[in-house]
Image 1 (cartoon, one colour):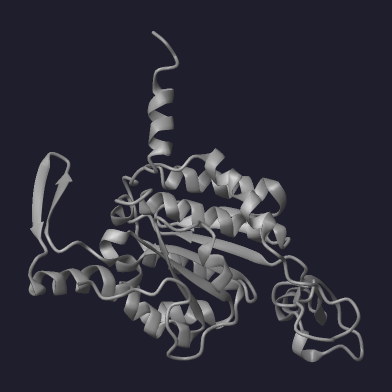
Image 2 (image 1 turned 90 degrees about the vertical axis):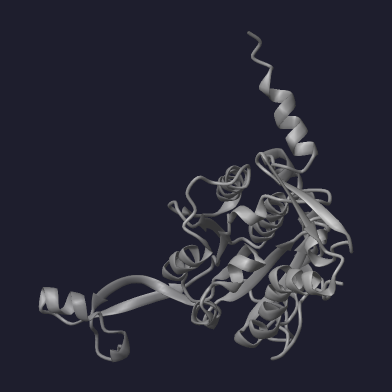
Length: 321
């Protein structure tokens, strides 16, 4: 029996945009490297150029015995109680920001009519986030609902671990998926102030997340939501469409205004609602179509947050029909 049998099928799947490959995600590094990077400040404060220090500014280094003049607000009360001698905490500048990717793996993402599946585009958008974080010197981590997180790591090693996870997660619908809400709850426990959060999600899954969760996540972090969308969802033709699910064939008539209104409510309005509400809470919201460039959302993420009541950062969503 030849050992070369499965290879063509894997290659065909990648060419058709059905499943992402690790090689495809690695190749996207070139796109990020060509993008211009913000200038670093060198001589004092002369403008808005970002500092080379990242994260929340200070992180815990160690504790030592209290000395006269120490700030009592930094007392280490646990160590003081344990030893019977007053101790204070020492902090140091935090130089590595954490970039955390949260991957929605809802079944609705494993679908596409133009260029590639939404799941493949999610993996590609995540790869762009990974390479951008690596170029900025961040530590990189990732998680999805239903399994342990890929722990934070810096450098190429951290990037490759996350890319490998994205290729696995988006190769096929997972048998067990705890959902985006559970993944975001996990993310909230992992994140520290000053981190960057990138959420890759289907609009219907994101719309089901409680509003308080979105608010809490953006309070102390740079938060970006990338909503994956297929052109058919955004603008379906005015005719009967045939779908196949497993062995079943389903026909859906979209000629009438009533049917198109229901389609719009199911596939377009969730993204529009998120775009109306989340920017006021500190989120950058982008819609990324399956036929768009994998890094199209990144330019919006680098821009200042939109004002309250603002629309989508990229890719406006028109009403269907």
